[in-house]
Image 1: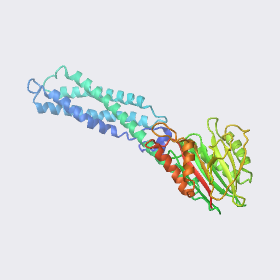
Image 2: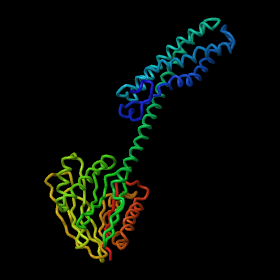
Image 3: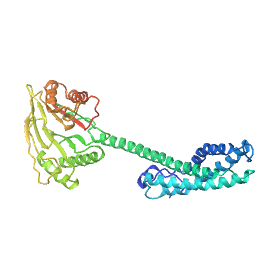
Image 4: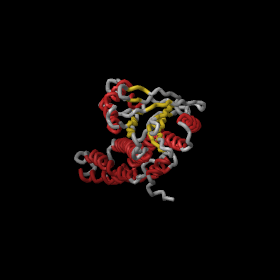
Length: 407
């Protein structure tokens, strides 16, 4: 167990809500700030040197510094037990409460110091000091003590929040790295087909994901999903959904049955405010059949030789109702056909005028660029959406998966 004078780790500060534990700064702050104040007070006293019975200017200046500088250092030491209590208590005080405590403590210390300073000055002067000296010392020392306490609280709060923000940023970077590791490192090689995909999160972590599995009979399963929300909560639900999907695909069920099982599991895992849209497709390269099922996901696009059309497949999002059922749609792929799967972040991207990218622009883009290789088409779609949005920061995760039947 660490001793009381040791600084706790940042993790301990975050878990206990502690503030900065560098309490030893207070005597230094009291001395550094008190020095100029002491000099000002001393000059006030020394101004009587040429027109009263108190002695010369330098004698009075020395008397003022002798009395006031140690008082501020002592005030900082007086403040140390309070600072230790504020930084080591299980639940830290709010910034406002801490500021009032610090300001009040240093104001009392300043008032006590003013009385001590006045007594020292009385002993050092050749005659009783002017009647205005004690009120000036009391007001000045108390006010400056309160200002020091409040100012230090603002500084302490800033440092505390900066440290937490720094660690959160580091944790989010680690989380992003872990999440990126959940995506396929490379898409599998499928005889007669090319497959490419990319996920572009709006934040460090996101709720979109895609995945690909190869079955023992040669079929290939591919999934693209979008978890409601963004950031860490969506990332956690995304990881849960992915692991559940991976587990269910090993059971050998068809796409519709797989989605029913995933939905039943998620309904018990997530609350009523969360849901997942997902599209699952299984490709049989031998028969050139693509079996597609959807859980509330945007309709996939099929680019044929003449036109682009939507694959009409519907279903409730996952996690809403345990009794939800899902249908399958069979699509025959001819050589040169391209299937585009995407999340709603693509079509809901917005330009500065608040105009959405929309489905029509995406279909026109696929119609125009559908002949491109799969990887090129993925990058072309994302680049076009980014150019459309202009300077507006990305509001939602964007994921695109393209399957292309070779000629």
